[in-house]
Amino acid sequence: TMQSATKALKDLKAHYLTVHISSGLKALKAVKKVSSKTKIVGVTTLTSLDNKDLKEIGYKKSIRELVAHQAKLAKKANLDALVCSAHEAKYIKRFFKKEIITPGIQLQKFKNDQKRVTTPTEAFKKYKVDWIVIGRSITKGNIKNNIKNLINQID
Image (cartoon, rainbow, N blue to C red):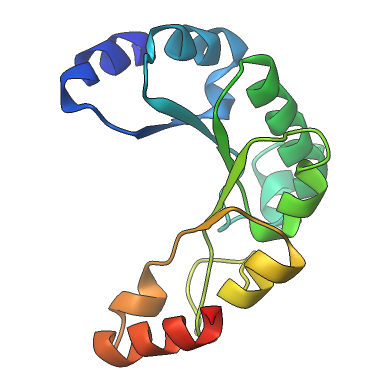
């Protein structure tokens, strides 16, 4: 299914396509095989989950262990980039040497479903990520002020 979807997207000339690493090594390799110029990005464990959540859904590994395992699968499948929380990024970079894309970036603290979050500054300077993904921190409230705040934090 993933391979067929990837082939169907070729005409769109997408630069990146995300796939869940939990789909398994065989599926990841199949997508990579037909991806052409589209970079395939493996999504690890969601930033809305913590160790307690993992236990609840049946995982025995910690977040760090699970994301490390997923990153190693992404490497075996020769994926082009990885999505993971900044909290795991620095550790993952030891063996996954390609792009790290980090969601869970917040400009200010507010309650939502995200558990493993950080600021843009920490993501780049402390955790050494390559790309950040910011959603609600910009779209909630005054968008113009939120964007100014983002620019100030990154400078």
